[in-house]
Length: 166
Image (cartoon, rainbow, N blue to C red; front, side, top):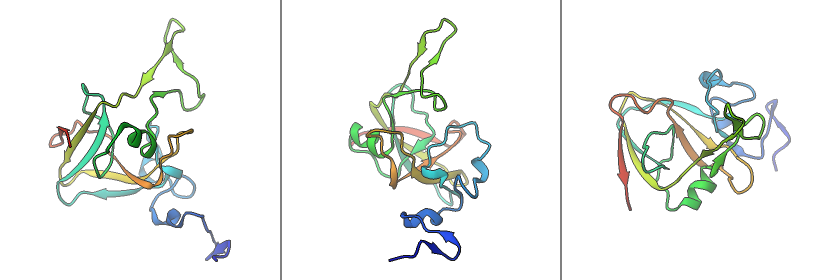
């Protein structure tokens, strides 16, 4: 087997720990100051500028196609999206683990509805961030097997959303 230390680097049980240019521990990279609650496993991601138009997929609300996280193959079911992409049905405040409250002290419930799959055409020249999905607790596993694509602003000109059906 591998020794615990190789070349002075700690060896992760995940071989790809060093396969990413950026990570939360030693090199947070260009997204370090982002206001986003980034969901890359261990903060691992790479930056890429698309050389050609690409189609990615996302699942979400049937009314609002926009989103920031995508996958490379169309998801087959709601359960697959929730497990592989770690999409909880409801989101609490990441810092407190509690619901945020409105001005009347009532819980503001952030639902994550999955009722439509979108195919999204991203034009050449767009900067994308790719990496494994972070764990969100319980069955919302994410993990190193699922690669996701993060695009901070999907309302840029040239980005097109299409309702996808099998």
